[in-house]
Amino acid sequence: MAALAQHRIATTSQLRRMLRPDGTRQLLSRVLNRLRSDGFVDCTVLPDANRTRTKAWYLTQEGARLTRDLPVLRGRPPYPITSTTAASLKTPHTLAVVRTHLAFAQDARRLGHEHGSWDWTPKVSHSIGEGERIVADALMHYTVVESEHRRKLRAFVEVDRSTMSSERLAVQLIEYARLFQYEAQPAGRRRQAPVGPAWLRWYPVFPRVLFVLTGASRARLENRMSDLQAMVTHHPLVAALAHEARLGAAVLEDLEQHGPAQAVWIPLAGGKPCAWTD
Picture 1 (cartoon, rainbow, N blue to C red):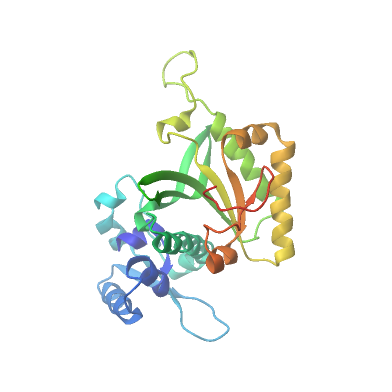
Picture 2 (picture 1 turned 180 degrees about the vertical axis):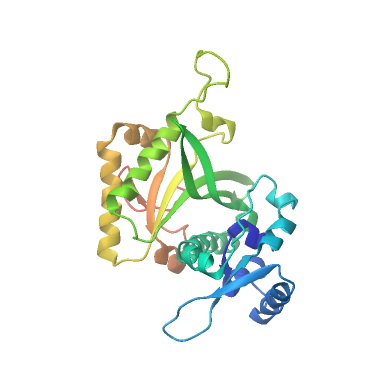
């Protein structure tokens, strides 16, 4: 239930890979069906050309109420879904975000790094001034373990299913550049000397910004990556961000097939494909 509260929607298979990668599908199915009969979770059946009944699970309002005070979810707003219709509208994008998380989690297990279910926080929101906010699809915490050295990394992750225009996708880079430069002023006080970027309240260094693309042909996805690179080249605020933070893009299917630690990422500031940790 806590995993559903964190990730909002997930299939039975995704929950098994997330929570019990060595367990059986039948075990998760029994637990989920019991929770459904108790009124804490519900599901929507995904359309499938092979006519298999893949279920996507989510918390009911009662389930969200029970999980909102769990320590691992402290500070996270509840995401109750009120109907199967509402769930079906959110499902495709949310499941793509979960797929992205699982690609990183599986890679971390294989490499001996640290990245688990609670190291991936969907829908992280920050003010960027003028009453506007940026909402990242996810904030990822990841610890690279190399011999006796530990390197803590953070990344904002944007998952693009090619449902918006390429220009709208690239504009998201401007929003991250605004977050990088935004300096909040104390409420109720006259404007005073800047106190530094607002993001320093949450992060010791500005997180990487990773775009994960899917839902189109390889050629179309490569064109979208080129548009992201063009935004870095031509927009002064984004160019300034690229000097201070790592910006990259990759195809979701490449992450699932090869792993995020492989050289499948295109640096948006230019350069050869590399691992996201480089």
